[in-house]
Amino acid sequence: MNASILIIEDESAIADVLAYALGTEGYATVRCTLGRQGLELMRSNLFALVILDVGLPDMSGFEVCRQARSFTDIPVLFLTARADEVDRIVGLEIGGDDYVTKPFSPREVVARVRVILRRNAARQKPVASWFEVASSRIRFCATPLDLTRYEYLLLSLLLEEPGRIYSREVLMDSIWREALDTSDRTVDTHIKTLRAKIKAVRADLEPIVTHRGMGYSVVNGAER
Ligand code: CA
Image 1 (cartoon, rainbow, N blue to C red):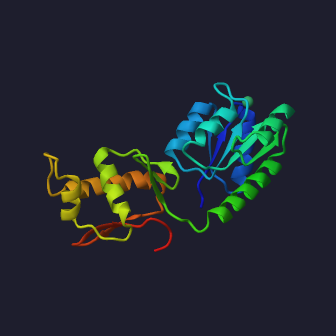
Image 2: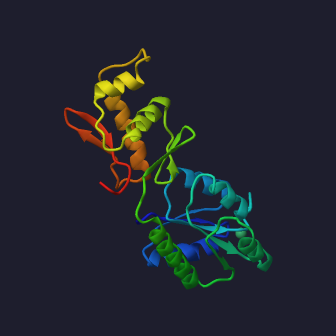
Image 3: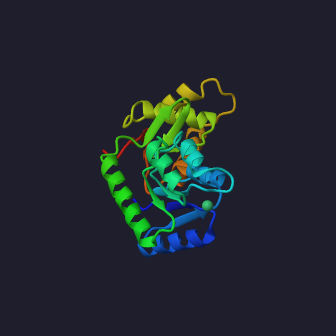
């Protein structure tokens, strides 16, 4: 997987050095300086890893990590300037994967990143499922999808039986039975917007399959 690395660091000189060092190793990076921006980015994008400064202007890196853990299990590498913060990272269950103390050599950070990503790739294989449905939300590759009511109903129905082909008629009957404003394009239109939202998370995956003249099915995972 070639998802980019998110750097949340308010000191631009440090972010520059990191982005450069990671770039020379083939890692794309995205940067921001505030914890709340970082959380926003993590909610709307799939990153391979986040490098998270503990001392951010708007909130601590610990708090960013704590909040991020409510919606993602992305690996977190903390950057810290103070020895007493290391105790907190190690001692408390903040949910980080590793830490580096400032000042650090960029090479060291890149090495840590590589170790974490390798460990994570091993842990995640085989991919059990792409979608998770929980408390009226659907996550795709660990990223929550922002769905309309009908998109949600449609996708969760398809996910009830991955691989099963649902005809347009069945989908119309199950989901839009009570709806007044429908047409024979309703199912296709919603499939189209769903695909766009899924593509925004992972452009390389196509979990919704069109069966010409028959309907749609969903693939939920790498096994197919
Ligand atoms: Ca800082």
